Each structure stands twice: as C-alpha cells, then as structure tokens.
Length: 90
Image (cartoon, rainbow, N blue to C red; front, side, top):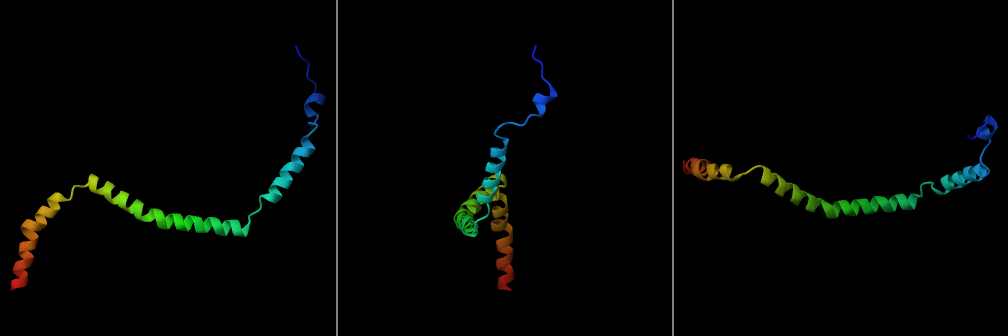
C-alpha cells in the first residue's frame, strides 16, 4: 500500500514552467494573419462559385424524385392549354 501525503500532491511538476512558456509562445504565434484570413476568404468564395451549380443540380434532382410532376404536366396539356388557346382566339 502506497502512502501519499499532501506534500506529494501539491508539489508542481518539474517542467510545468516550461509548459506554460510553450503555451504562451504558441498563443503568440497563432495570432490571426490578415493575409491568411483574406486568402481563406477567397478560397471559400471560389469554392462557393464552383459548388453552387452542382449543389443546385443535385437539389433539383432530389426534389424531382420526391415530387412527381407528370400529373401536373398532363393536366396542363389536357385542360389549361386548350383553355388558353380559346381565350386567345376571342
């Protein structure tokens, strides 16, 4: 059975000061670089331009699979178009 005293628990690690200094220096190096932010914004914009038509195409195809438009088109051909032609002739 090991005996642990408060002295052992409260004793800081030997490299804790080095760890804090490393964290501080890392936080100084991770500051926002305006050029990097501008470059990332440009990359996101170009990717949006490239992906927008593809996403629109995929969404339109997905919606067309969910909702069948053929009955509506048949109704237009059978009823609505002849009515419009009659109104145009008058």
